[in-house]
Amino acid sequence: MTTILASLFFSFIMLLSSLARESVALFEGKYDELPERVCPACGSWHLIKNGSAQNSKPKYKCKLCGRQFVVNPTLTTVSQSIKQLIDRLLLERISLRGIARVTQVSWSWLQDYVNPQLALTPRQIKVSGKPSVKLTIECDEIWSFVDSKKNEVYIWLAIDRDSRKIVGCFVGDRTRKSARKLWADLPEVYQQCAIAYPDFWQAYKRVIPHEHPESCWQGNRSN
Image 1 (cartoon, rainbow, N blue to C red):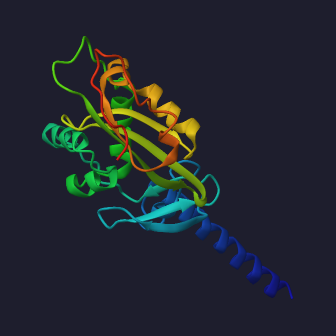
Image 2 (cartoon, helix red, strand yellow):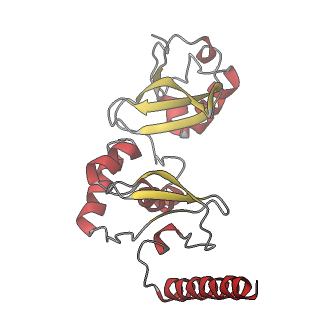
């Protein structure tokens, strides 16, 4: 009986010693496969696979803190030429997803790059003095949704027909109130002198005036 207990005790000591050696090896980084499954934010091993990055490396998500990460990420610097290309593509009103695919930059990096530029962009176009040419704008709405199709969102746009610049914008519903917001977003010279061509949506009829002073151009304001 004593021999059996001594053998069990010896086996238990050896097991503890083995676990201690593995812990030390893990701490020193000798096991390459184990640190890959450790969350860099909280150190948790409770991870799940969460798709793959653009370079096909697998992504993981920590079930404890929600951190998403890539094992041994490859850090790349976006060149100045790529940034200039992105600036030109933004002027063409291409979607951010499309720009990310063309330039092969990550979606998160592109979003962080674009946000500060959008914050510095004036919300309203500045037009000084009376224009020397006739102003003509086209008004229309674009339907989309947020999270689910029950949350409908309409993007109201007014575009200068000649320059193709967006001179007015409002995001809301498809009521007359949103049409008024679009008209209020236009520069004053467009409100006074531009001929507007909206679609057949009835909200425009009582928002866009049909007559202007004699110093402004007259015209039919509906299609």
